[in-house]
Image (cartoon, rainbow, N blue to C red; front, side, top):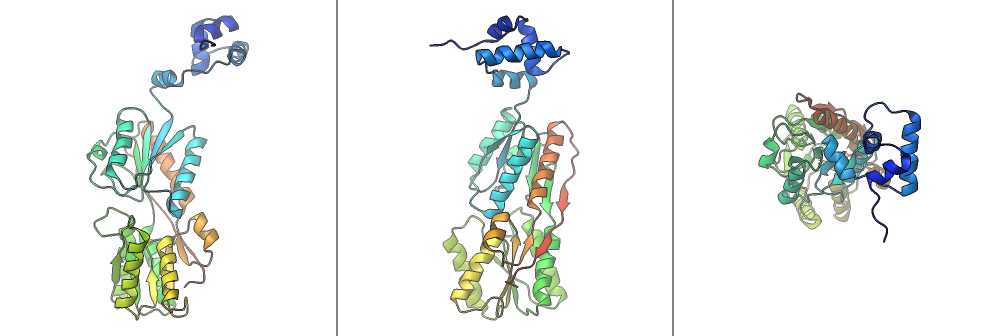
Length: 327
């Protein structure tokens, strides 16, 4: 069995000191191109692989970032996590994904990775609330679309403007009885801004705002049961502002099963506009979030936090209306 190649072996092969090999590996100090070339050639010939863990300890940096989101089994989060991984890779970071399924213990484990120095930073968007570890305000953490703790910056879409756009779109189409679906009010989600916009605009137009609460983590059959209640309790409904594109799709299919014609009798506007949804349901009228920009901005803010900046401000990004045929 071949013994593991050591730094001493590389130094002997290259005809340089062990310290010189270490300086080449860690890019420290001035070294001639010839010396660097000799060291790399010796490493290649000996099939030497640096001790990455030791180098990380030397630099006090792991070049790893954790992502904690509810699930990838959703077009919005799948698109967002994919883009975050891309943006982090472009900046020299590996990604540790931790889909929490909204399990506080899983989310807490990633926080402990950060506290223990196993990752350099954390980008979070899970739905758990009240985790005391988030109060460690000096930690490099950035949140997406979620209020976490007072000093953790948030990157979010302009949810209030999106709520106004969606509701106004239905009002402009002549809808008289518009219903909204949204997360429960107790959740610390920026989705609540959408609901506030819907309610403000409905009241401004002397209409009764009605919101049905739908938990993101509920099984599909539970969500469909809530949507059935909408049609049973409000058969006059002619417009629905859905909290996300997945629920908009469920509502449209259910409405058609119940005999509603979309958009002639019922108009529906979604929210998210992820790539997969746009491909599979191009006909869906929806508020399109700038998912790629959410990711790149979150990574930019996190790197500032990793580099020691404390007063990193939250960012709100504009949304747009994707015109489909469901409204």
